[in-house]
Length: 182
Image (cartoon, rainbow, N blue to C red):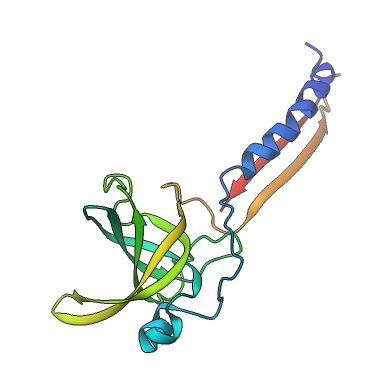
């Protein structure tokens, strides 16, 4: 088989591979989001933050289904440029994320990473162990549950092309590779 004849077919697949690699990145409407608000700053001054929009994320601690909505408790982390929580950094505090309707706790389970955009509706007192703790409540407009695979974070899309020639025969080879890491 002549490998050079397969080159046009592989090049035709390249745009589809690149688009597929980017399809798993969430698109958030961040218009009006206050990038300076953190769970800690909202806890310190809840009245000043009520009604403001935030984009937060982190690791799910627990999920509670209420009659008309689901409450997700989240340990907040800074977000990278793709809005994915950077769990290798320092935690920013805890917050409650509320979504109308039912979210399955088997899917939105403890340890999963989540990102969201929503509005601060106040704070709620809860317990962490025996300690009483005020946590901001975010009414979610958009939620993204990150895939469970924890591949490299923050590297985006990578692309490489290789061409080689066999020293002992008359054949040549080449290849194309695409990878993602969010």
